[in-house]
Each structure stands twice: as structure tokens, then as C-alpha cells.
Length: 220
Ligand SMILES: [Fe+2]
Image 1 (cartoon, rainbow, N blue to C red):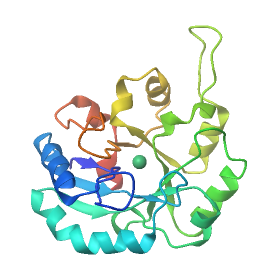
Image 2 (cartoon, rainbow, N blue to C red):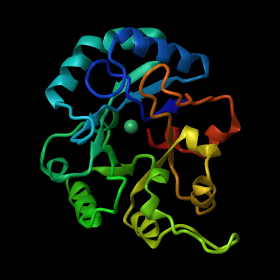
Image 3 (spheres, rainbow, N blue to C red):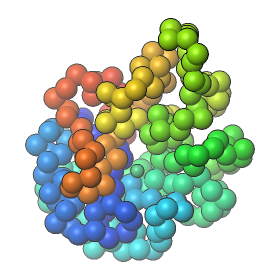
């Protein structure tokens, strides 16, 4: 099945689509590229896009039947910013599964990273880190052009404790992080992280062989 596991199309709750019409426009475009199922993942506990879980639930209740009228199965989830609140408060895993999509601060590796992940795992979640390629602190800057690996040991440690990784579709043609991660068989999921119709983020083209590098369908 062709699945986009990360986007911000739930209207009016975060920094993604504000109107239902925008969400439907993107869903139509996703469908034309082969999408069969899309998980809506509004930000939760994110400092740059504050949201309220009650508002997310309300918007979903109000809009889910419209969103599901575009011929693509649409399910609700969230993108949880790893913070103290994420460890104790209610969250929304992907479509009623135990898979929780989390995001991290981009400026520095949080010192509580492993402890926080283990708390989420104790709560019964399987953790997916969103757009893992975005966090520069997980990649070593190689001095030599052919240095063996640019992947920081922390990423291997995260895999060892069962954390799953998601990459953005846009990053497949990026600056090498994808190749490093893929060579080490580290990425399970791909998502578009689409926010609004003209945000310059590519939607996933499911006709391309690249989609088959990922395991969205296996896990979801
Ligand atoms: Fe996102």
C-alpha cells in the first residue's frame, strides 16, 4: 500500500493547512501520485507551533469525513516534540497503532534523549524519529571526502534500542545524509512533511522505485 506517514493537513491546528480546501487540494495531488493512505501528523508540544490536543481532536471530528472523501484513506496521528510534556501527557500515535512519531530540537542533541525515549517505550510506544536527516548533530563532519561514515554513534545506539527513523521524501536528493543512512539500512519510513499547497515540499511520487526502499506498508 502507498502510504505517506507524515504531513500537516489537518486544517487550522498547526503551521500546516489552515482551510479544508487546502487540505483537499493536497490530498487530490497526493492521490494523483498514487497515495492510498495518509497519516495527518499535526505538531504537539512543539515550541515553534503551539497546539492544543483538544483542538486537534475537534478539527479531526469536524473534518475527517470530508478529508476521507478525496479517495485516499486519511488517518490521524501527531508529530510529538520530545519534551517533558510528551513523557507524561496524552499523545496521538499514528492511526491507533503504538507507533509514535516524534521530533527533536534541531540546534543541539537533547541530553535527555535516551532517557526520554526509554520512558516513551515503557509507556508502550514504538518510537519513530521524524526527518532524522534534519538533525545535524547526528552526522559527523568528515575531514576527508571518502571518510568511512558520517553517522554519529548515537544513531547506531538509537537503532540498538529499537528506534525507527523517518526521512522526508524531499531529502532523497539531498546532500548525502540519505546515502549514509540508507547504506547502513537505518531508515524505515518516508513521509512528505507537506504543510500547505505552495510550501515547496514535494509530495511522494509513488510511481518511483525510491518508495520501495522504505517499509511504510510493513509497519503501518
Ligand atoms: Fe512535520
